[in-house]
Length: 355
Image 1 (cartoon, one colour):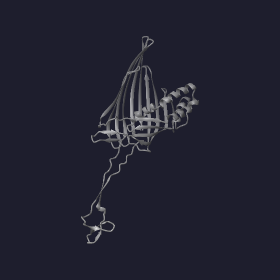
Image 2 (cartoon, rainbow, N blue to C red):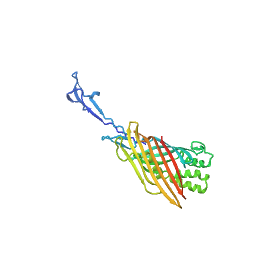
Image 3 (cartoon, one colour):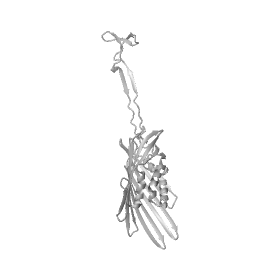
Image 4 (cartoon, helix red, strand yellow):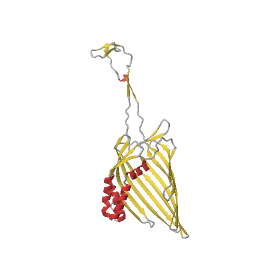
């Protein structure tokens, strides 16, 4: 989304004669009279050479701009009327083992969304969000796969047919989102009609109890809070300060509620700023532990994860050009009861790509 600021060059005109002509009077129209090189008295005229024009070129507006102090500031520079696409793909590989046998499951999803800039006022962009399509594929431990795509026919399998109907109802629909120049969401409108369309599409395919459950899921996933969080996780990247090249900034979170306690940390570094792309590298860690006892049985869990990847931002507009993030997570759970102990280890690798 790109704000265009047109700055017209200032024309400064300085008039001067080719030589110092002596004014000898004025004619009936008030024009000054001079004597030319031939000795004739004529009206004074301005030649092409008598006008000197100085033109100043306005600096090019970019999203990632370098200041006089050498540091870089960031704000969206989106163009009204232009559509900015985003394709979000997620692949998760889940492996589990109890020391005797192991199994692996894989899930893949792809979501296509267009963001069209409708307006820009007072530092806020109005975006029309258009869902273009969604697909998903799941492979179980036996290697059997089921999949669906909203750009294809409705699947015969009832379970995935409902999921297909939900995303199909979203396809082609729009809602409006307002965001500031940092990527922070101000408001989201038009969700009620979208949610009604989705629920109407699945109502006849499920039981009353299932419909109640779907209603809760849709209301939660298509809330302003949920959609704002999803957008900002991808688009609201820069901190509210200028950055030097190779400078890092971190988001740290302490988890002290619930059965699992620990910390989450994400560090980003501005590694390069080129005319086409601005590169940000990402590294993160997650360390959680927890224990619980009930009815003579004790359970403990240890969850560790590492994240690394790269984000490429369009230097001119500030929009995401490419994202590649990999999260590798290990969960170790131990259950002890009646003198026996069983340990289950799970490994989850999630690869997220954008555009």
